[in-house]
Length: 449
Image 1 (cartoon, rainbow, N blue to C red):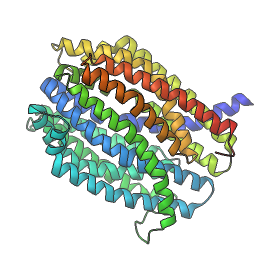
Image 2 (cartoon, rainbow, N blue to C red; image 1 turned 90 degrees about the vertical axis):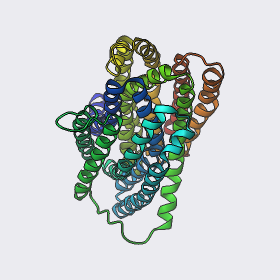
Image 3 (cartoon, rainbow, N blue to C red; image 1 turned 60 degrees about the vertical axis):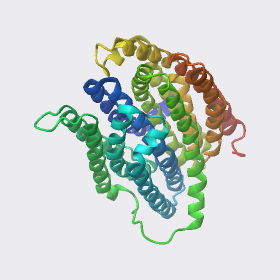
Image 4 (spheres, helix red, strand yellow; image 1 turned 180 degrees about the vertical axis):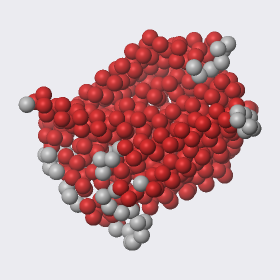
């Protein structure tokens, strides 16, 4: 009986998680393909320009939309549908898309107008600044469509539909990959545009994905009209969830961005090796995010139905599956690190390959702790608690990771491998705290939670 229940839960989680995992991997592959192809075309400088620009842009997208509003919309819509409050689910989804649309316009304008100033302020110089500026300005157009697509995807996930966002990501990748090859290297009669070609390909891909998601809105159990007055009670509820969730991503992403800026001070060799390793490792994060998204949706539905036991079982099963998948990636990074790094850089850049492989091997340590962080954070958000994950991430990033990065990387100029030892420590401490909090909220004091 217990085994049967576990298998049923696993099937439901996998049914939601696999499309979500696929979607996240496909979105990450945009960055991977751009980095891989411009690395083959222009070497270290191109990798640094694209990698640095992407870090800055996606940091703010994740804070404001992907891990802020979008996750909050998923959580609220899931709990409303679980409680059979369809009208509220519709109103909250509508409100979230309206607010996110305004934010998307502002972010696009800032990156389009001030891209050179932003990169210069962040420490980019010379050819990295010139190429990065061109890449960021073109990509900013696609970012608007990317952010609105992300908001609508959040609505679909809250309705237990993770397939539609997956199809949108697949369209984005097909368009991006095809145009990347043609525009970066000048194939099939197209001009050879290098970094600018990668930016154009990404932008066109984002527009195509947006148009597809727009065409699928009829599949939702309610209508998003973007009309009517703003319900300020609903606005407060959305903001109360979205702000801590966005701040949690900010606490992580801003420290990550500052860390990248410190690594840039170590020189082009260290930065390009680190950037390639980060790009490869980011693929392994996608299964974790997929299971975290399924936890937000399924835990949210169970909480809406007042079924705490079911919420607990969905969270535990999601956690187990995420640890198994990311544990597999840990072994891949440990034994095949050099082979993976070679895919992203010219074969004669042996120093970059050796250093990147060393970084990736250390990164294998943090895979399972990262899975724990992601899924338990998603479970708490499904319960409607976005403040606790924010506090945990704020402490671990600003009180552990950033001071150590500042001392060892910025002041002492230690090798870039220290970056990876520090992040492994931070993820492990964070995982231990999440386990403690999760047990308190889901087992010891569930009524109080």
